[in-house]
Image (cartoon, rainbow, N blue to C red; front, side):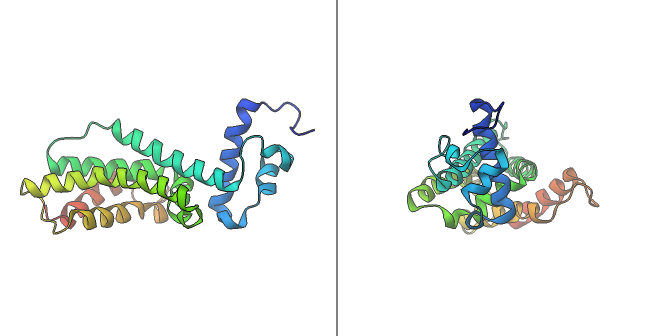
Length: 195
């Protein structure tokens, strides 16, 4: 029997992705076997291949899905026109979105090295698309004389690295709320771009 009694195909695919996400985040992609993923969802390992051709496809699906959802969520944000307010909106969005998805963020940044060249290129294209949204805010601010950035691309990469770093240390039960962290980071981001 390939499936556990009572399992449903429409539920199994998402359960496989959730198990892979959890295991990759806990142990690293290279250390996780298809057998472990199958065991997490109560499948025989052979049945797993009805849902995914291989482990690489699972990793790519998770990373591509994360980036696609990130871009869609950013598109839904009403971005202000004024550069300072737009920068604040991006900072708040980035921190909030990523804080709610620590496993996805960890995998999206730490497992790039495990993608095949073709899969890497597709995920990198999505990453560049996301980065270009912040870069456009910085370029607009520089053109308006609101920001002083010698290189908008470098400033973009530096800010995103700073914002994503919140995931490594922020704890909801900590001294400051996420709203307070966002406000502090808005101030730091403005200072970083000479606002």
